[in-house]
Structures are given as structure tokens and as C-alpha cells.
Length: 126
Image 1 (spheres, rainbow, N blue to C red):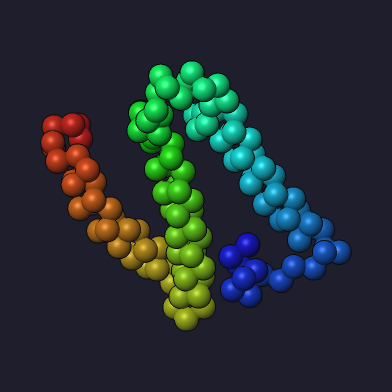
Image 2: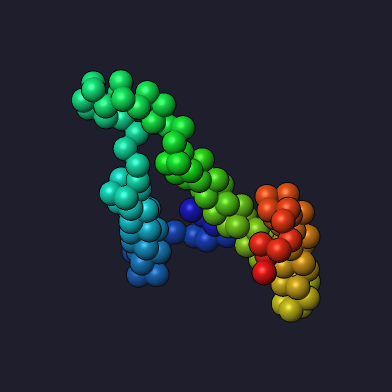
């Protein structure tokens, strides 16, 4: 969808490749929604007794779903934008290995400090 938005891809409804891309996108979105609604935590309970037993249902260990879902969505959007930027860089500088090396190097440089902040105990990295 981002490639269409940035005019990298053109959608022609009559083309079989465009139809398969549309079907694949809709299948992916529908599959993600099925998993979320089927396996995800209950956010709202219909019975009033459940509300009195656990008034802070959002703040349990299930709250990782609430935080993780939007973070995962942001991660996928950023990865997609990274691929779009990388494809534009490849038009200017067509050395695939060099571009990919620097892409991964900068990704590692960004994630390494964050990982060390999240888990400062170095023995747990074994």
C-alpha cells in the first residue's frame, strides 16, 4: 500500500499481478485480524462481576498485547519505508551489497544500544 502511495507501484485492476497483490494484501490484513481477535486477550467483559473482580484488566501481563500491537504495526510501517528508501537509493547507487551492508550496519547501530538498555545483564545474552 505504501508503494502505491509513493507511486512506485501502479495498480491496474485488470492485470493479474495487481489482482494477486491486492488479494495478498487483503489476505494478510484479514489473517492478522483473525489472529488478534481469536488469540488476543479479552479487553472488555460482558458480565459485570468480571469487572469488579479485575478492574484493571488492561494492566495485567496481557497488557503486552496492548503495547505490542501498535509497536508491531509501527515496526512494519518503518520496515516498509526502509525498503522504499532502499529502492530509491539503489536507483542512484546500484551496488546492492554495499547498500545492503550499510542498511544493516545502521540498523545494528540503532538496535544495539536499545537492546542493551532493555537487557543490561550481559550474561543473559549468552
